[in-house]
Image (cartoon, rainbow, N blue to C red; front, top):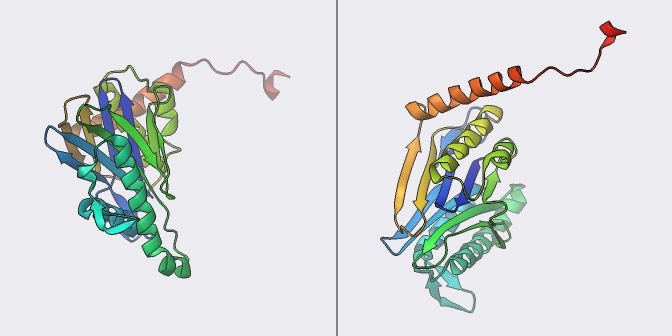
Length: 251
């Protein structure tokens, strides 16, 4: 299990992912799930993955080396060669279908779940900054102004934070802060999501990353954010009046 989040606001894009993978409580490993594809000052693409690790790594390999054209296997296209964000999303979908097909027979016989999903965000040249979610079947949907974020993996614990706080017009670093709170809420409720986590911040039209950081247990800001958020929640529920409904003692 994992948790990945992409937030697209007017000023730019925030993408983050945890790194935990496990096959039981005593077999926990760390793998990077937020991948960066870039041509300096020409394009920056951020790809976050969730699901079966071998399939998602197969997808990343295809995107690095080139996704074969289904009509001519001698022609392939790398993700960094995509001419637009829609073409990039199509490439990720094609790579996903191909990697799943290659893994399907052995995994189906073993009863292994080989579903994967991806978040793809970024900007190519003078085109619009966009954010897509690519499903296991290779089809994609695009983020909108009304709901300017996507999640994949273990999303239910962090979603209420984003629903209440994220808006398209908010400051980019406020979006980063809310994303980190969402990540913390998920880690507190599900042990299969954990540190370290990777996040990247891309400002609109900059065509170069403003931040690319790995956060571990020693990160002072993240520790303080977790403590302050817990205190704020306790203070908020304490400040709300108790329900006025009578109990047995009032009868």
